[in-house]
Length: 521
Image (cartoon, rainbow, N blue to C red; front, side):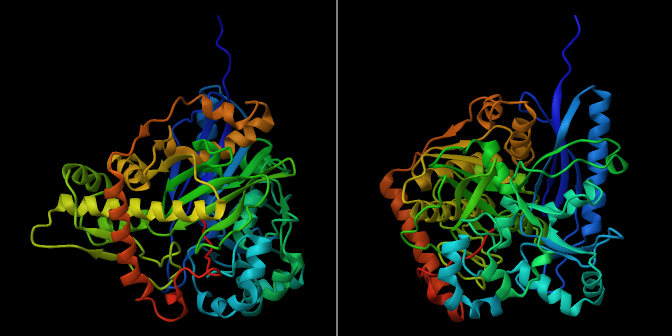
């Protein structure tokens, strides 16, 4: 009896710190990913950059490794799916195929001070049309100014050979041999000029930023027409089935599909995204840092989502372990936290690159307090994880405020979600069950492949793909409600004393109705 040949999708996950690829199989699981790290450079405290050529070379290498595996194990590859870090942009020459700039990473804040001056005139307008205010970064402004200061880019633009896009635009252009210059809806919405009503670029903001309209990629559905791979590039001709921003892909993979369901992903930062439905929510009150996005766009129909973001949770963990050496590794920190079973006076606010929610303060710094001569490393570790859990609660409360309804299901994933202490702490402080999704470490890889696999006929819908992984383990709250409220009140008091009052200038306004900040991965 011959065994039926397996089918799957070659899925690429282009993150901020590394490139992964794997086959997402027709049972919903993945093969062991191929992985390569990506360099991230910060020339100063505001700029964050990467090398687009390095990103592309790494992508080629991991894809070829996975294709070799699929050939060896006789797995039929039905197409390619891609998830990417959002709002990282670059310019390149369409004749040479080489980057003409560094890739400006989504964490970059070089325009924060100038953009703040435009808030009074633009915040309300942009929040209504694009789901986000002016914010602290503007990829289209960067593109416009790069044409002035970058002679090579200016010459290429004059010659009609300059391309601009986010990382998904770059990868699709390279994979198709230059046949497609497009941007998926979930990546376009993160760039900051996506019109939620029309599904195209919001022309008034594009004009104000000075970005030439001919430079902007065409926006397509997340499972839209991305063309096919050039055999000269990957050695095979495969349809590109889907392209998504990484957090949007994770929503699908973790199981947040219906209005009121939400996911929490702990990566470089922590994201809480909730499904809003087929229409953008009506904002009762604008909450700092909470944005309305396109959750995903398929067959010309959008599912909208609401997102809150804490920028430096995973980054704070890396800083604690690698930069200053307080702990040997994140896993060791988690082990120590498990040893401290009682309450802790230690409080850690992981705002190492500013705070978005509940207070918009880009200049804010982190806080570690409550230390004494009796503080042990285990108690310190416990306080750090509880700080992450409080940050999740801040995001969850902000998202619910914008949604106008409670979150019914919270699915968690990402590297930090492997900690039982953190999951239990989130359940205690949120006062509701928390589900740790199966195979959550591969969520971005799987989510975009599920959307693409539906298009390729591997599954009837994305829910069927997720169902194959089994039931998610649940962490129930054990903290009495009075103790939970007291802990949250102490946390808010800490933020009020050290963030709101401590941030200079306009950031000290606190949660005013018009204060929002963009967030992406």
